Image (cartoon, rainbow, N blue to C red; front, side):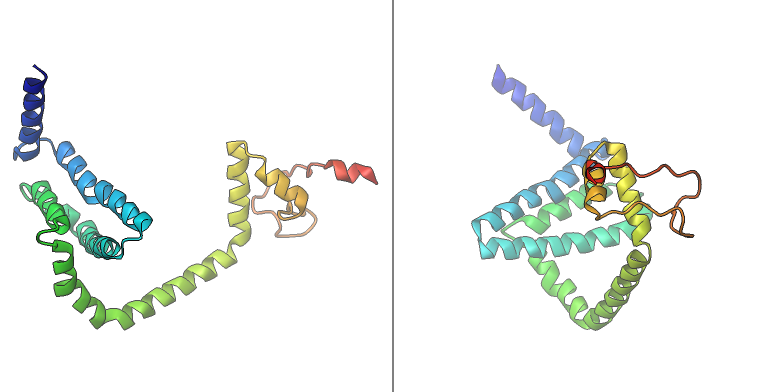
Length: 199
């Protein structure tokens, strides 16, 4: 009887997956499981076993998958209207991983590697400029970022900001100095620690 139940379940699952008018939720879940879930597990396994061949295989897969994801993000509105798009995506993700065809390696050697070698200097230049601008932005707004972190930690109820303020790592803004308050308005006095009463 259990054997009969498992056949019905697998048949229903296959019909949902392969039916062109079937639910996209099932297909999207299958694509996510095959495209991300299984590769993450296999990548972790390859790292832990220190298997260089498997590590290279999964690095090639992630390069292919990442490139596919970039293309998909920018063309999603167009290709999602394509009939059976998620079926083709599922087949593509399986093709990338199959050891018999080694689709990720084929895609990397025939398309990704030549593109990368041709445009590497320009990509490095753009990434360097972007990194520099992000670094400048973060450096210029360090006080605001720290203030937001402290406020989030207070909301979450953590004692970390209070301990850091006591240790002098985070100093409350001085209301006597102009421009020290990130948010204008009434300020509360800083809490007095036990070490201040020892004098």
